[in-house]
Image (cartoon, rainbow, N blue to C red; front, top):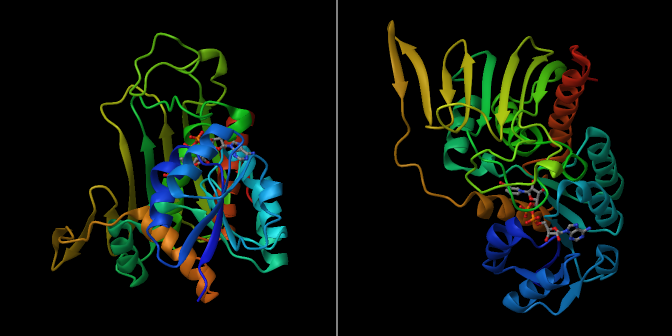
Length: 346
Ligand SMILES: NC(=O)c1ccc[n+]([C@@H]2O[C@H](COP(=O)([O-])OP(=O)(O)OC[C@H]3O[C@@H](n4cnc5c(N)ncnc54)[C@H](O)[C@@H]3O)[C@@H](O)[C@H]2O)c1
């Protein structure tokens, strides 16, 4: 069988640090072409992985018939355009999270995947952790009963990303909500079985971004270039009566960083980090802690799942439709933050 040939669009930090090493270790895959608007970045990667085909314009790369699938690791503003162009060129698409800056941008990707019949998988890598997979098995077995509330948190005390374009509203679509909140919201909705959201209310603040005097784990940033929120929170209602509270920050005066979701159901609850379940048996409260969970590389699991979906012609485990719903929720939270009103989600 010939190898699955992959082209890469955007070969920066996440691509070099996590995607390329995983793809390079897969026997059925060939890293066939790389594209980055920074020629030195693409060249560096090409030399390291022995890639002959190097591009600065993804439209040129997409003309190569040999390429079966692309992996998009650009800033968020390129996800939708590159995704649609790739799908229309007949390629399967793996795109980093968030699927796009807005639900409208995500919608055209979902439509293009449907029209072309090509796979579209979104990089919600947290689902592939051993802890997430264990919780999902319990959730799917109904062990939590009716899950009616969840508290999803991705909050950093001082963790403003100072590489790339993470503080640019235009390039990223938003700050911690779209960058970190997308991970924890996706995990929460997946564990809840993807209930349909009907409305969201939210707030977004920029209290640290415009200041030059703030401590930060990754060093200083340019306050003039910081156009996203540094804290956002939202309250989401679902058609089945459930609700979710989400809190996200790049900077906040809190004790410590938290990346966790806590689900509350009629028969049990759970938390992702540290992974635990909460139950009652014989009028006795129990904390259940999984032991011996395997150590897994979440990116290895995620990208192998995408390769399998392409090779076996099966549905990818993280679909464009699921990511689109999270996009709609985030759009509604941002809109609510601006208008001061609860926003209906279609
Ligand atoms: N799954 C995760 O946990 C995770 C972690 C970090 C980043 N990400 C996502 O990965 C994406 C990239 O993040 P990063 O940290 O690697 O950023 P980065 O800035 O390090 O890399 C992005 C690369 O894309 C290139 N690029 C920009 N526009 C392009 C275009 N039109 N065509 C080709 N290349 C282009 C840039 O030159 C850069 O080299 C973001 O969407 C981010 O949300 C995901």
